[in-house]
Length: 554
Image 1 (cartoon, one colour):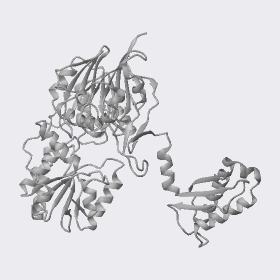
Image 2 (cartoon, rainbow, N blue to C red):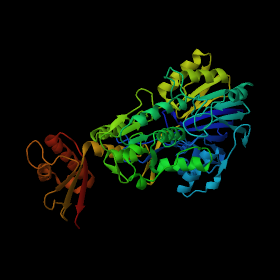
Image 3 (cartoon, rainbow, N blue to C red):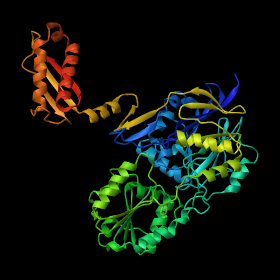
Image 4 (cartoon, rainbow, N blue to C red):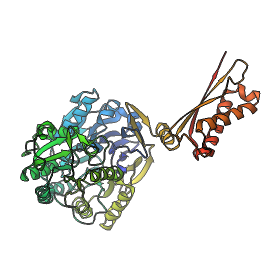
């Protein structure tokens, strides 16, 4: 049986977030494997109410645990490293990362009681990590978090370049600048496949540097009359520094609010990659500083309900309150799907008299991802035999292939669960893997098809009713059934209490039920549920979820 080189996305392909990619080499079914990134995505109240986190489905990987040579984390964003603490025990492989990312990964492993020593800190190219048939090097690249990296993966079938998340920024404030000479060097002898970020493929203008927005932010803070609050991704250390320096220039003291914000600044300082960050003051000390001399850096740029932004919008946070005339800056892009939460906070702030500034005009935010011209530039440098877009919704992947085709490249749209054979002269789909999502619900991981979240949505949409009936020793109802409701209108179209109407309909049904039905719990519960739902629909126009409890005496 001949060896083959495979690529299998388990998350991040056909969606933005929850990145998890697998590369394998060897005989079919016996490939040695490496994993690139283990990320999460975040729930919303519409589709995943009550869920804490959404993780990739790694059942395929767990079944092949003994074949995994290593786990490589490209950078410390949650959608790339957030699942490492949840899944490491099931995979058990060594973890590799650059120092800052390793710092974050170790913290996540420690939070779950796993040994932090399984994370090996690696240097960048030309250092090589040998994992079975793979030789892997980290290629520094610019992004919106320090020490981001692409991966150079040498295999017996040729060289693969995994771009990771990247942008072309030669002056990124914090982190590695774009190094075109490096990417030219690692590509000069030929690249089998480029697995490439697709996030901003629809943005037609070249990407802008982080330094572009500094002067505009500083000017805004100088002109603002009251207190200024700014929110961005906590992991965007360069943006935090840009905002903090602008505050310093405007004679404003800086306050960090939110655990994630403090943790990221601390990690960046510990690893020696954050220099020249202005000193900060505590929320307690901020209470004695004039409002016009304050700038709060807060979490919650995506509308998270428990973050500092949301709490400030609802009244106060750690004693700090927003007032009319204050300014709130969203120095971030809203991730698709989070718009409703962000707009809710914006309106709450407006009700407080706060002036809200978003990034609709691109004045106060630059993306951490490559725009179309930058992707084309990467294609021209690497000149891969095969282009495989990743990190994007299906429309992004498909458009990225079109861009590659226009430049003379052979590309393929590969979504989660689609195993691609990269061994030949052209990519082929060799297998489809059952994959999906795993929900962290409290402390329990549940499958997307387990029905828990689906039932929760049904409860939210339809309300809930409990019907209780006692049957005596002679298989006769002992009194009338009684009904309790939750999440339903108490009075319906007849102007009588809903529970009374339903109870009366249930009693009438029991009065005409035959002995066979009264002796059969399963049939009796089904009939009572049907009557209750029909009765509720007639009164309030909704069919609630109904739980029937039949208790028998003797």
